Length: 340
View (cartoon, helix red, strand yellow):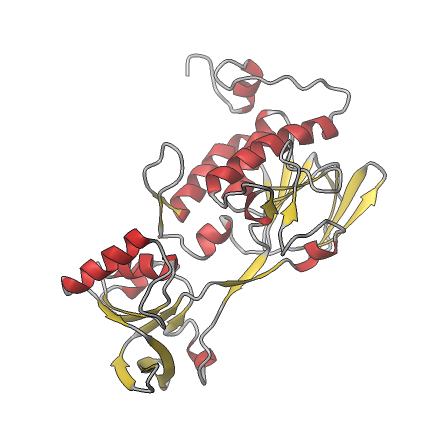
């Protein structure tokens, strides 16, 4: 049994930052994530994809952002419980009892759900025998862009991920972008760049086409695509990437007795508490009027949730807001030495 001031469910960027916010006010956190690595969707889906909306950082990758957040929380020595899922939550007097898939039990006054949009899996190609090529020519995410270097790559999709990776991989690969519509639904700026690259001969665009078949024995060597008129084209290729979005699953969170709204959790924006006292939701999984699904919004939500956790974890201690630039106690927790 592990006693702690807060259990954070989700080790993505928002979950990592809330650990920092808890740490600077003297609260200890345990982090649980059902993935086998730290970083959440940033690491699982787009570790190399550029991120442009982190304040004061013009550009970074999901991997770089995760690395910096881990460095930031290092002074608080957090414990990570990876490849592990919260299976049950129950009230234990004035605290919560959290049970995991690995039979661990946590006792805590606070639970912060920072699990993105729950567990997720990519929407897959609906063609015969696609399963035998998965991770062997057919992929639904890019873990390392250099795996596709100097190869023929067919990218399917019309959203931001498909456009972004078509742009990025066109620098090192022979890329064909295939979409079932003539119009792309991703960012207009990205669509314009893709069309410009096609004019320059740096990639090809095939619309409106859908995948018809995947050919090969032990690995992919070709695909066929079909348009609305039934016309079929064969394309020699080494790799096929599908970006059709994700299927979201809340999993056991749906059984916690929380108010749910279309697979998201409504919160009070004063402190991002749910309808259950001591259970908070931050990041993509929470909803409220004016909600923006941005990492920076999740950082703000985590900062307010952490202060609310302090009042529950230490009801007899008055919370006093302090700036990190002037507070000696915060600087001590961060390991800052005099003169630094």
